[in-house]
Amino acid sequence: DDMIIIRGVNIFPGRVEEILFEHEGVTPHYQIRLFRDDSLDKMEILVEVNEQLFFDEMKKQREMVDSIKEDLRSALGINVGVKLVEQESIKRFEGKTRRIVDEREI
Image (cartoon, rainbow, N blue to C red):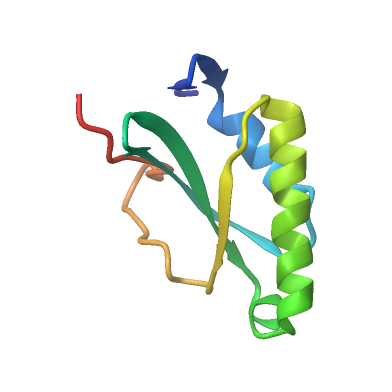
C-alpha cells in the first residue's frame, strides 16, 4: 500500500477504500486527487456511484457526501473533499489500478 502524507498525517489508501465501501451505492472505482491550494496540501476523492444513486435526488447525494466526509474525517483526522461521479468516468488502466493522482508541485 502506498502511504500519502497530507499536512503531516499519514494516510493509507487501503483505509480510504474500506471507508468508501461501507457506503451503499459506491462502486469499486475511486481516485484520490492530491493538490495544493495556495501553500496548503489538500485531498479530494472522486467516488463512482451506481447509476440509481447518481441520478437520484440531490438531497440523497448530499447526505451521502456528508456521511463519507464525516467517516473519513473521523478515521483519518483531516477534512477531505468528496465528489460523486458517474460510473465509468474515472479512467481505467491496464494492469495495476492507478488510485492516486498527485498534482502537487515539489
